[in-house]
Image (cartoon, rainbow, N blue to C red; front, side, top):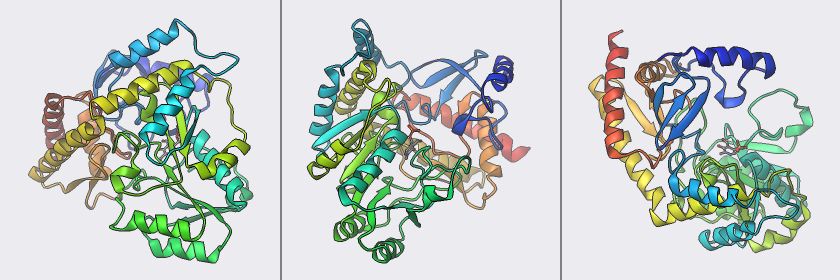
Length: 406
Ligand SMILES: Cc1ncc(COP(=O)(O)O)c(C=O)c1O
């Protein structure tokens, strides 16, 4: 893949932006050298980089796009709103429509609030739980990502020791550890915040073990701690009404972002009535949070999800793709397992702790215009057709062949 403009732009970026590209999109060790630094357009399940290379995409803007890039119905809804405007002195009335829609869709939700990013509302939800309980401690799973704020970010920069003083961690699926933390900090834990399943980077995803969620729910009730579901990444990819339905439990508060606006920046936190007063007491606002473009995109996106059973569709497409890709691995003697849920699988190769083999697969796939990621879960776009999936499998087979032969 040609990468000339991308490299030039990255040089320029380094002059005016610290590290050029920051966060999880930064070029890093183990990423294919063919990966572009900058994109220019996208449509459906494909995007084009600044050098004009077209990519078949398995990352969906790291999850922010579910129905495909520039989905027609969503773009039309936003275009209609563009004729009216986005940010005003007062919220646009679409904010109420969207809150009503979420309350209707999500069985336990009695109210909803909106922001721009997942981090805005994971942090806010923690504060709501603290306000409600008058307690300080938060429990999370080790290695889980909940955003960029100091209580949970994966970096070390700019942190002070007190940032994590009241954050406790347990190993995913280890109910005994969770219970011990709750018992040892009796009447001090405000919330347990968890993702629907464990999807850390650089390692296989872990599903909840049998009974995990029911027990977490019970322990939170027993200890009067709020159960906060961070559905930022999984939301609308496991179930069209919230991922708690996929695993069969009921949280107190849940946060959504990524797929909610299909690429338009929006996040939502929904909650039970008993948290309404505390929610009102924790200050919440942002410069462009009352963004009617994003409200209209989210309303259109939710409608598409509902009408087309999109969560079921991406799960089925993912299942088809993952099982075939595992077979391709077997053909070459590579023990590839697509872990997690099929709509957002994490590829893990047995014995590949240094990620050398998965990097090889991604490198050779990238040379053919297939965008697989070596150390983050992938996302199945609903714009991928079964034909696309077969094409991707064909390329993946070729890529693995080249890797094995090298
Ligand atoms: C599970 C989870 N929680 C929270 C966040 C933070 O969301 P944002 O990047 O929109 O702030 C992310 C982002 O990747 C996430 O995957």
